[in-house]
Length: 447
Image 1 (cartoon, rainbow, N blue to C red):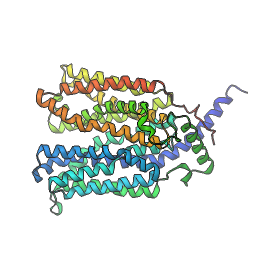
Image 2: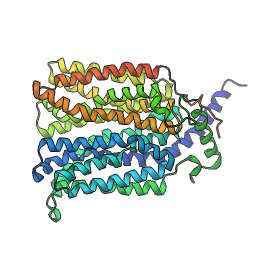
Image 3: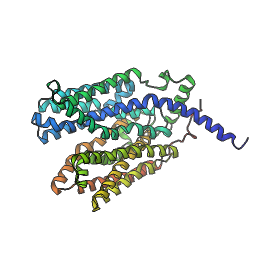
Image 4: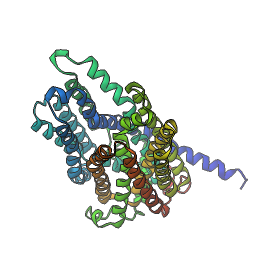
């Protein structure tokens, strides 16, 4: 055997594997990115609609705050039941149902006249959307081995920072240019025009998304067989396997530890992100236009960090440092931003902290799905995601109370920093014992 025979053979087999996943990714990932972008727009458009809605309907800050938080109540209560049904009915049909129903419910917000219907529809939007994100993450486990899951999750989750970049300008355009059209206020058009695309995309999912590799028409039979064997071989090695009942998720110590990590990480994604424009304004002392531009920068960085961290974690197979390290650095930078006297240095630290906090996201879900498979995986992912919504319910009022009491966000940011540091340590532990199978060692024979 010559010295270069093995590398050449390895390059050939790697090229065959890459060609399969390149084909799979182009077929399903862009669709889910679009779906999640509109999901997040429908989730946060209430904050933009408030600019006109509260005064038009005479809603107080208390009414608005309660209505905004009721989304998370519905989401929390129905996340797990939704994923139980997803596993029974099938990802394609259930994800399509989720999108159509939440799109219709979001569009119906345009008809709100009273507090009762404001509360009811916000709760229903949470109910209808529940299960979408964990459902998609579970769907990816049926198509991608652990060695490719972090980078795929980074593409999907990039929809959130992308929404942070484009959501404001889109909402501003609708509120400004559609206000008064056909006698309707701009905020009513906002709910209608951002709700309809979700329902349309649901129909697209139902029509074009296959549930499993075996159902595709764009993979040939050897490719389908190899992909199915690879996924099934890996699922057989998970801590909670496809043979376990979904009830196992509630008895698993590992699932609850993963839930705790995701809750701590949510202190950054929910706590800092929700108050980001106000924090940036207090740090930079700039006007609203400059603040809107400065507030978009962390999301650009988040997209970059998620991609680089997820890709490097998959390439090396290492999870612990890639999971816990970003949160530790984010916590340190957030703490330093509070104590520095230079406002622009504080802003740079804040931007980096937000980006690093997001960087852990794709690696977390890759690590989580390396522990889980089958119906227990669907429920576990939903449980983990729903627990994180506790931060959405409790953290904003606490941060607002701290701001009112101290006239500063400093102590609120320190609270978030402590949570991120604790999450970083836990992430090191959770990822320390896991190594994703690299392409060279992945199971199953090549086609």
